[in-house]
Length: 325
Ligand SMILES: [Zn+2]
Ligand SMILES: [Zn+2]
Ligand SMILES: [Zn+2]
Image 1: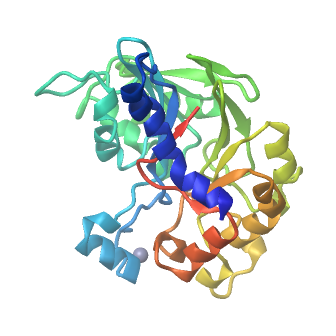
Image 2: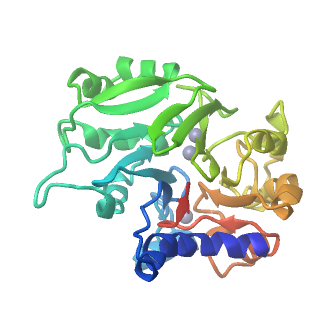
């Protein structure tokens, strides 16, 4: 409970750090670099296309029960304003860019042709890069927006339409991420790509270690079950000095997938992740779940599954929440 309570309080504490203390003190507190959660759903989003399950029906009826596809923004204060880097370009990018309007110096009354300072991609599954289509000629028509991705992902974007047209028209500019090598975003924040096991039809898949002056975040929307990893996940997170881990939580348990065994599904269920990380969580690691499938009962804040997550000291990430870096 302690970790969950801290997780819920962090955006509040951070907001107080930026605003409340500024009012209470004669010395203004400079805004700090931070990560903002923009979505927590699996690639298909909530509601899911063509689905009439209770979760999707409720989401159609009540916009407050919708969830955007997993994404986050790294916000870097510059003195005059902010630089903003988007992790993944999802099918929900229109609304997710709107969730960043307070930190963008966007032109009033017309389309912003530089809506972000860069995009950092995990991999080429539909929820993670197809939002790039909005950078193209039919929509924002951006100008050389940097898109960081692995060499294999960059080759995929350069070779295959419609993505190759974005490159040819210089709407996006692929830049190569080298696994293990940090990219410096300024203000003491770096992003280091780590290759992780995940089905790789088109490209490899990255997790990101986002290291700020005070906090290290592990961001990983998609990965294989822990049994397929050569190194245990707790050792990896400890080795990176992780404070907060945002982890693939596509399914809560095998109950969502009748007739399937753990070896057949492509993601670590939340129950196995909690078992794998319980002692690290008890020792202070803040684990928040992202990339929840529409079938995942933990999406519902009142569900026994979400209560069990919180009882064990874990949390489901909240859209709009900020993590000070
Ligand atoms: Zn995904
Ligand atoms: Zn559904
Ligand atoms: Zn994927």
